[in-house]
Amino acid sequence: MRIKQTIEKVPGGLMVIPLMLGALFNTIDQLHIPFIMNFLKSIGVSPVEEGIYEFMKIGGFSEALFKTGTLTLIGLFLFCAGSQMNLRVGGKALKKGILLTGSKCLTGIAFGILFGMFFDPMNGLLGLSTLAIIAAMTNGNEGMYAVLTGQYGNRSDVGAISVLTLNDGPFFTMLALGMVGVNFPLIAFIAVLLPIALGMLLGNLDEDIREFLKPGETLLVPFFAFCLGAGMNFMSFFNPEAVWGGLALGFATVIFTALTGILVYRLFGEKSTIGPVAEASTAGNAVGTPAAIAAAASVAAGAGLMTVEKAQGFQEIANLATIQISISTITTSILCPIAVILWDKYQRSKGIDGRLEDIPSKKIKISAELEQES
Image 1 (tube, rainbow, N blue to C red):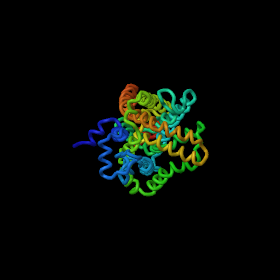
Image 2 (spheres, one colour):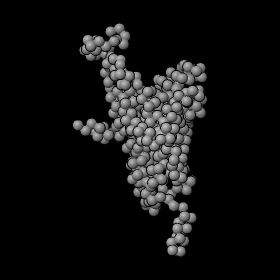
Image 3 (cartoon, rainbow, N blue to C red):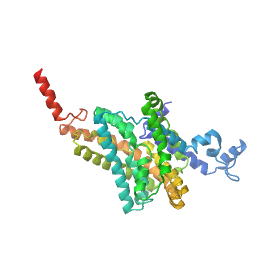
Image 4 (cartoon, rainbow, N blue to C red):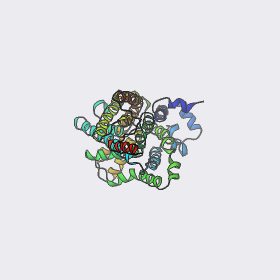
């Protein structure tokens, strides 16, 4: 049986399919079907409340892994992702990485802040929130970026991924929410960033550790996605706000982050602009950001720096934001490669081959003089 291959045929399948399965199982669980509850009772499952039994809450390792382990699994994922943030990158790749990271993050943050000015930042147009917008637009699918730039870009485009991994995780989302008045205490930032920072430190100190932790970037995604789904109702995926909000988020991510990135590349003298288009996507791991933000909000409320009501607001929108980001991930997984192919054709019509490394005219002149002398 080729289960993995079948799942991977779905855009963002390793994240989306487990998420939906978790939601489906939880929905069945919440229906409290009599014959299922009677079976659970007969094998000695403890009741959730009097007369109510749920197979997602049977305790032990099963409940910890499939129901309540969301934050632990996301934390481990961030640790593994941090270990892949290579500080030793070439000058050209470093420049492109900084340009891409900066343009993508600033576009997502600006979009989220402007949305909050004109609409309800917690539940505005199409049910979108500032949280969902920033989380989806600032975090790109680095795996797809690597594949697309490997085929249509050059070596420094691919090398820029070392800097782009800084987008992984909820840091920029927390930073942006702080800019619009959400008062996260320092400890909330530390609690979120510590796994990333420790992973980054170890990965840069020891190449073997980086290689050892590399599989965690993909291995953990279906597990925390299932856990996230296990806190949702499957019917939420058919909520018009979830569907239309997610689609709008996907189109906005591809169009606006690509255009901003192209403009920034041009301002800094880059001829080929394949990189910004290849980065115009939403990463599957971004689905974990709403849960991380809701956890940070709980920390802030506990420290007295945020009202309990506001913290509960983040917890209430987390599920809808997660679904919208999931749909944005699927949408951008389809649109982004198409955009890269079309942009590559456009560039070629203008005489620009994205596969060739840009060489400054001064270096070309020196090389020509050396050839003449020889």
